[in-house]
Image 1: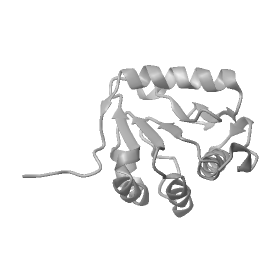
Image 2: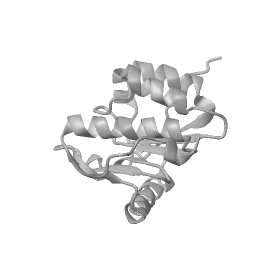
Image 3: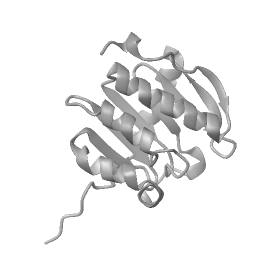
Length: 166
């Protein structure tokens, strides 16, 4: 699907958890509709992301196609496992498209909270008050990509889709 087939994405500053969730969902919807090939989702623990919501998992399901790639970066996946059962189940099905990394050495306050794609990005600058910005501007996308790349360089594989036993 063409990139311009996606609905207009929000841009500018956001404030508050409700607007963060709304804009995050809009980004995932655009990713699914426009067929974005690459996504990076990053947060210290994803505890206050809406990943377990039925609508979010439906958008991720619509996005999931061969050739697509999503990287999750967290300090810990314990809260994600506890709070987002639908997402955990969906991730097991699409493990071949999802790479999960952990950067445990990074301080929680410094951990990036962002959705990045080559087309649009959203970044929380203050996770306590849930404020940040979103948009397609190249400079901000590059800045977010560089921040995430640095954390990814310091990360290790984590959050296996399944546990194999002997």
